[in-house]
Length: 504
Image 1 (cartoon, one colour):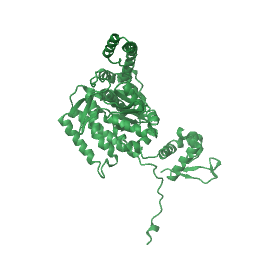
Image 2: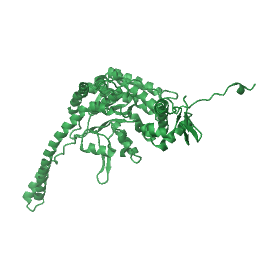
Image 3: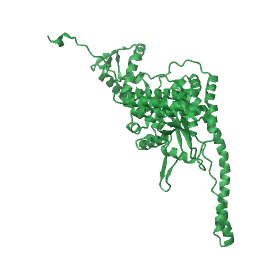
């Protein structure tokens, strides 16, 4: 018997353009410990995804504490510096969260800038007087009267160094090159933050173009590790800037994040693995609470007071070096160290063949260190004079590290999607979800679609004929559309190019 003849043919139907990326776990807000209240207040005020508020709070807290202590890990001591990357589409109120969380920081910078202006005026006067005195003594020391020359030379030696220029009070930058960051370290504070609610400007800017990407990735990776950035210039020689710290938070839209997440340079250098990354589910369409000015005011104050305490607290500096930090050692308690080793062992085993983290080894291998850093930030935010990280703080930090490792695994799969396929998927969803209602309103058939329909009524980013045709052909290849014969009558007119819609 011919088995093939007894089984009726059944079409496979449309093929998925991309594998559905599972929804991420809920952000463990309670694990934020002393930061949890502020994060909840910001989330309630903005109605943004709570993970966005959490990322802002963690990164700003890291900036505030990183100058004061390095935290013990399983392999020595590491900075309490955190790099955060938040992926969220436009309209998710990224800027709103950042504005509330960073309000205290901005006020501190504003006050310091005003004081710096006064300090600069005093310095300029002192510097002019010092220069005039030096020039006079130099002239006398080189004169023809031996007694006067000897006295002038002695006075020159007693003058001391030229008055030091006041350091720039700037604590943050948004789109610097690595050279610009090093320059800021040379003239300013040893503890800085790179924060941008439009991180696409940094990722797509001069610092990360094809010529500079390797240099930027290497420089930022060294800063995360606590190693000194270098400055090499003709005439100036090489300078290593010891005792510098950098915290970072970049907020980017998915279209800007995908190239970074799939960039072999960023992945190969371990740069991405230094980030705590999340792409939270959208809240757009569900933010129905009435704006509350009092709630926003409370959210501003939630972090401002503690930020001011930490930023005004004297930084531990190397003797006679106002720009070289000497952070103290923040130890792990016995219980905290044991728990961290258990977490390290579990993530190490999961990196083996067939393990959950086999394909995100770089993230998994750094996750225990990330947990220690997070524990250090939470501990110092609560008490900047703490001697050790407690078991409870490490428990919370590991919960957070597990969340971020899960996000890294989830987003690594999404990063392999090409921009063309991602756009085609967006168009597919629009055709299936939005076109029927639009077609009915126009008195048109909802079973067919024309390139002109996409250009005129579709998503804004596809309102160009060439792109619309390209993406419609992708949907044909995957079986979601079928091209009708040229001359087919659609809505009372012969069409050179028209498509029938297949609903899976």
